[in-house]
Length: 221
Image 1 (cartoon, rainbow, N blue to C red):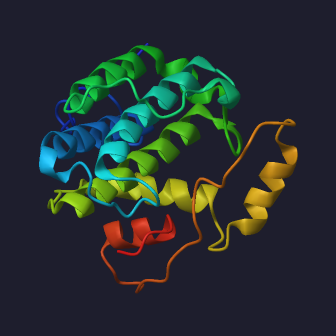
Image 2: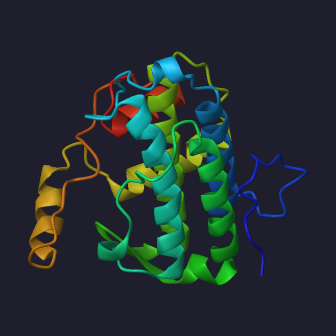
């Protein structure tokens, strides 16, 4: 069964995956995130980011955690058993930790996972849909990190398009409060739930795709 190569962003001639396989875009998103993480300098660790309540240092750890959670989803673990943000990674070692987590995802996300019902904190979807929504999360958090640290990122258009389609499918309405209230009501007693996405921010219809993407995720580009 095919598996994604999460070590580097693939090019059309390098990737064995079909152009519409979300694992292809997940690999590209991981590669873009890794390069952005590697360019962060120690004097930037305490800077604020567009991600609420996260410094650059916390966001670096969170990016590793996102990939850990992708692995958990691929294993079929219930979201209540997914890890919290990593606090065990030494300063400056987030990018190597991201690579290790990506290799784990590569081993787990084989072809059969794409068709399997897969749980995330706000519902159950096919593995392909879950992979695509995590393309979105990795891309937006990479934008958060790049914005906070003054980096220019060469965004892959196909990966942005995958992210856009996924987030518009998962969150079709700009106002997410009713959706999160419904999810919260279905959570088991004692399991906290905070809506993972803020309400959408208005931007021009002809704004660059990365700007429209982060705005639909609740950021101000």
